[in-house]
Every structure is written in structure tokens, then in C-alpha cells.
Length: 161
Image 1 (cartoon, rainbow, N blue to C red):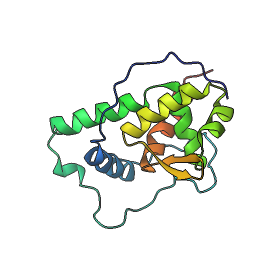
Image 2: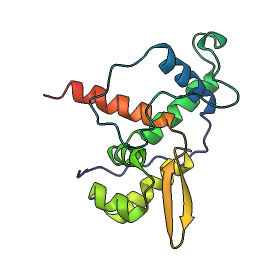
Image 3: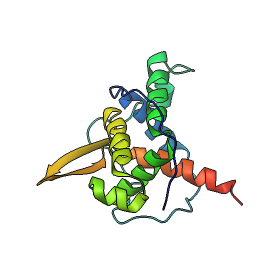
């Protein structure tokens, strides 16, 4: 897959979207989404699953509309995901952990561009990296993020002839 993208100037922001993920998790559990046309990957992180420990807050626990801090966090999360290369990175990490050169090869974009997008995703708490020898292996920090991206791609492909 080759992706052409304009480099956007999203300022790195600290992750503040955990409460948003709780709301989205419950929302997805309450209203099952239509089956995705995207193939399921090995170790599919988009499959329904339960959280250990404390569960997500019920949607009824939030006033309508949700508090401003939740809306701000939602905006930050969606901005962090709002670039074709970052969407492609999340889809790649949905399949397995990857190092930068594997992402470069899979996406067909220059290494500095992949590194820049990984920095934005990491600053937003979307991905995490672990050093493995001389390389850093990147993974999704929260598997619910794969739902957001897969649903967005599936929705976009519905309108594509």
C-alpha cells in the first residue's frame, strides 16, 4: 500500500482520552457495528473483548453532551488519528508489532515521515514502543483504537465505487 500525504503540523499533546475510551467501549458494546469488510488479522485486536478490573463507565453516567474535558480529549484523539499515514500505521500495528523499517516497507513512505507520524501517535498515547536490541518495536497502546480506525476505513470504503 502506497500512501501520499501532506505533512500536517499537529502539535504533540499528552494523552488525555482514557475516559473517552471508556465511553466509546461501552458505546460499541451497546450497538454492534456492521461487519467490517476488512480482513481480520492474526490476533485480531478488533474482536470484542472485556476489560479486566474496572469496567467502562455507563453512557448514562455522562451528562448529554459529555463534559468539555471528554469532548476535548475526543478531539485530541481524533486529531492524532487524522492523517492517512497514521491510519495506515494503526492498521499495520493492528496486525502485529512493527519496527520503523517494517512500516516504511509496508507503507512505501520515507523513514523520516514514518518516524514523525509515530512520534505524534506516541505523544497522543495511541502507540507505545519497546526497545528490542537496536530497534524499537511499536504496538497499539490500546486495542480499542483499532476499532475507531477500522470503522472509519470501512465507512469510507462504503462510499467508494
